Image (tube, rainbow, N blue to C red; front, top):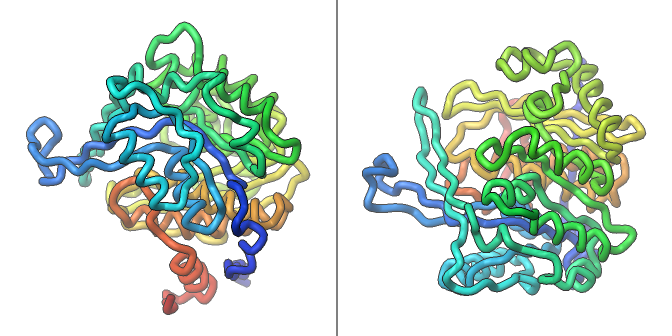
Length: 385
């Protein structure tokens, strides 16, 4: 018998308690100006580029805000047209920018040169984020007590902590800002982190030295991929060894494989919740997607079906899933039911986002709702919004 696919009615009732409130979700990190050729030329040949904003935590904040969760984003940006453009974009999407830190206008903002590929040519990204204004967001710059006053969830990512190593700083400014935030947050505010390892920012050794104690001591909700944990911690996934995972030889995943993987992470990092995103790239244009979440009490939920996505732009897909997952947790008060709701909303949200150009999830609750309903009905049915 085919397993019944859960269906969630994400109506206004979900959000009543959040309305007219100070942000219940707060995150900080770096946003880059993304340069994408607008004429389909290669970056070295193009004379016409699309400018957009790209940043893991910012994408997540926009996604949650568009789903109706009062959200705030904190960063340090130069007081110049790029910094103001980011502020304006955040406000346009309903994201609170009260605690932006303004740097001198001559400081650089991070940049990201991105070439979109087509099968068999891969997409290529080049970071230019050394010495960026955001990489120097330090302790003493943000009134964290005020910023987190009403927060139920505080989030960041491994990318943010890798900026110091990337720039060769003698100390990790963002880590010190994070520690100040942790000391200031309300007792009932959980801490979430997307591991988001980027080899272009730091080595595995550098990442482990910072991330292992940070997650173990302070993180309640860890979001990661099977591949990152295999590369950095030599953690396998049930029947698959770390080497098989790294070499791309991982086949069908059984529930017991994912449970075993999550149990290792709970044991290593002492987290309350582990969430796992799983992408199967069949070609550049066609991917399949699923996810899973397991809490420390053993409650487990996995996507009922591995779903196909016809990609337009994959960037921001994981962060959009995070937004949907956090939506489920926040609206269910972090109870076990939130795992299932978060996985289902996250899967629908990211599948929509990855059909859109650029990083930001310009989606709304009605179309996420419609896609979940179509999935639950099955048979390729479509519903009106």
